[in-house]
Length: 415
Image (cartoon, rainbow, N blue to C red; front, side):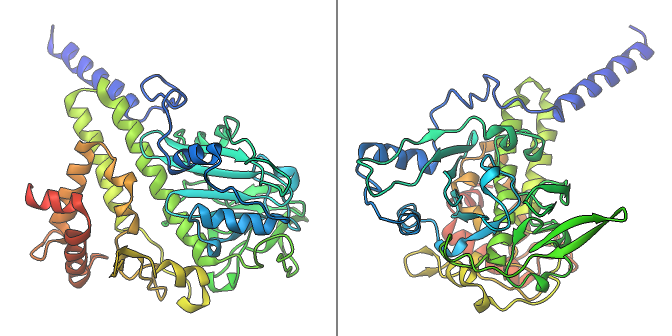
């Protein structure tokens, strides 16, 4: 074989491997087993107890009392309530500016309540992704909890271009019209904390939205003379159909951050499983790229500056969120807010202690923690003084993670 042919074959090999690295994920492929594997999300474990009648077995005469009880049982904060009126849901006919859908969430569960509709709940299996469930709220006359269905129809959006085709979470920002339909899409990028604030909140009710600069919160759009104009929706008290009238802005920002990280971790699981057919060198390249993406995200590398300072006490959700402890009697410093120019006091996500990270493939997890330790250790000189991770922050994070994150501690002992 002459030199020219060898060069051509080499370029062909690189080209084919490049296609594989950036190929569309087929979440239903046998290698992933999305519909074949028994889900290991938090709710699937609770569902067994619910179906047995040993859990969530109280009944109330009104939906809001039952909703409140159910959220408490599932350990989902009621104060995480955010109201969305764009009808981007399977229950679109029931959602609009007068009847918004309420979203509640914890670190592991995502709960949607539609007045006079069904409950939409998503649990996260750390290996195969988002698992959507649908059921109706139990009524006073029900002898047992209503049937809980794993929804396949939800995957039309939750495993689409919006999620990079992995079974993930969706957070849309649109220019809505009067009835809740969509005039245009504001955010065409994947969700996450790096999204500029002027591209957020479209189709959502948001308290004190003016603090976040020019945005589409609490507004609908109309076309006039070929231009899109904003129209403010009138103030409405939703306490009769929801737990309260609030739609907490900090809860929305936290949800945006959390969804971005969840989807990234799920993408890593799928990409690594599919990489077995790649060459060793391309596997290493893929792992490094995914690790660097995770490292940048965990440390808020591309977080935009807050348009205006926010007072923590103005957000009931924020006040409750930062009271959560990492261990009995130990404050979780990763949940402490800044809200002057940035979201958190320390540039490291609280989700680093979530099982999504601890269940990552070992080769990714080892490389991730090795790089993080190399950045955070007190004598690090990798990132210069212009880095968003200053020396005091690095030291505080290093000490905190050494104490409370077993994977960080393990990698520190065995570099």
